[in-house]
Image (cartoon, rainbow, N blue to C red; front, side, top):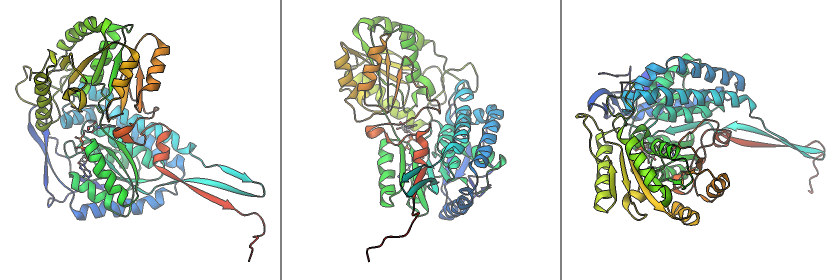
Length: 484
Ligand code: NAD
């Protein structure tokens, strides 16, 4: 199987190669096979990416918003037309099953392009009357933005950052994760084919060093990172040295609270979606599942039954519901947590093994019950298909325990008592919450975290704030009264 792109980078409207960079081997997680070899961006590539972005942005910022919108809209249509091809590539890059990639990756990327295309022409300033004089405001682009992606949703992340940046008149230099470098190149290709002027969306490959080099450059005004908290702190520090704008979409250990009166099937379905989709490699996953004592046995027995019937296997087979983890390193990390769970006394309800699939980085969907708050699997982000089920007695207790974490990305509540649902959600420290649902992230809704889970918001009208700045213009309408 091969997925070799034309070249490693896409800069100034065309593919670009420089084999002097350190090699990046792209591995298909279902087999461990190397499917492409790319090269990290050298200083020369980084320079070309930033120079062309800075040059192109000056002109782009002067284009009427409807013109920018038309191009993004066209790109969205093209992504939908090519959904199958893009989904297959995403599956090869990430190992996520085609059943998911066909509905969750290029399609959600297209949604972002379409949404921000629609929003762009509605962004206006205001007039502030001051009697004789007045002030008006103009919302201006930031300039050159850097996007840095994680490996779990490569297409979606590139679009969630690229679409608002471009819609508001910025240029973007995007560095995908070195683990999944392929699909952002396709996005760059599509944008140019849709009419985006060269240089406005450049893709450069590399590990952390390339990301650092991009952010440190004085021509860059903003960085938006999707990644771990640890990386977030480093990237934030580099950005702070140059006072750049930041958006940080980081990790989580989100609580999902299931009250006695919840619909069992819905609650089990929500918990499974919030722990097993994309083999559990979703930042907003509800990995601490707090279950009230009265529903515990019914919940666990249906959860075990439904989890054991998940079909794991070849990601390219559309009947497959769960693929491998993204890499061998991630598999080892997650297996380490499974061992820790057992050592620290959690009860393994189901899973924990590699399953019947021989090659590839597979791990069975795993459920631990009788987990307590201080166990490692209840405190640290695992980023794999490992659910921790904890018991609780009452509302006040569960809210306190749910908030007792340094993370604050997401949270969910399952109950038929809607007054309680809203009361609990109001008390939870999280940026994105769900009531009787989990992990749905439509582009219309703001997405992001509080506490160590992030800074700023992606998607929705909130993203306008993060990809533009206000110029305030005071207009004097009369004589200047100087006291000198
Ligand atoms: P990671 O932090 O290892 O890497 C993220 C990106 O940062 C990669 O592109 C990497 O090359 C780059 N990077 C690493 N060090 C850097 C440095 N010093 N300077 C600049 N760039 C650097 O994360 P990952 O393993 O790719 O992804 C998993 C993590 O991402 C999890 O913690 C997950 O929760 C988080 N995540 C968050 C969201 C969200 O929206 N909140 C979404 C997906 C994933």
